[in-house]
Image (tube, rainbow, N blue to C red; front, side, top):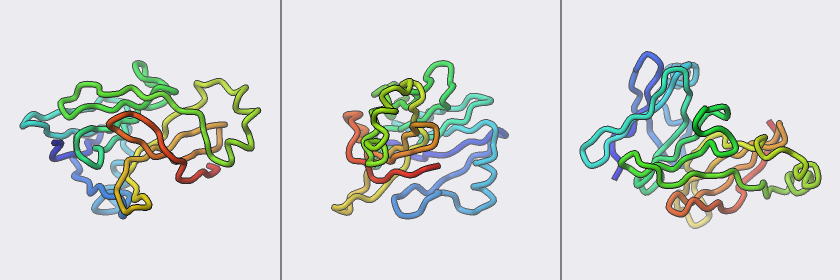
Length: 177
């Protein structure tokens, strides 16, 4: 099980977030949130079976959180990352830091995307990207992982994600940036 998940900023300040489905954005104060948000380099660390795992690269702004069951860490890489660029910029890691699943951006399914279907078919697939990951409460009051997917330069949709299988579920919502 993943323990002691922490954010790391460019000056290697460690921030212990509160991650839940009801109280985003996870930070104990606005000053700490701003420090993390404005950091040019940011990553995170966690402990698994007594060993620290760390994801941090100077000049890179990783986004990530553990899965609700604390078995995996879901990471969103910057869209232009050298190793994992969009549309493959989301990776699910096992607790020990090994790769569990490499995700590909699924085709958008929101009502807005369906209205733009013909235009989206002509869109290059690399213009689709993962934007962020978070926890959400679903209809049966269970907590689920979800991702935000960007498409058509100005739209996003939020989709449920099963970290165990890497499968995407329903569209929660869609909006224009």
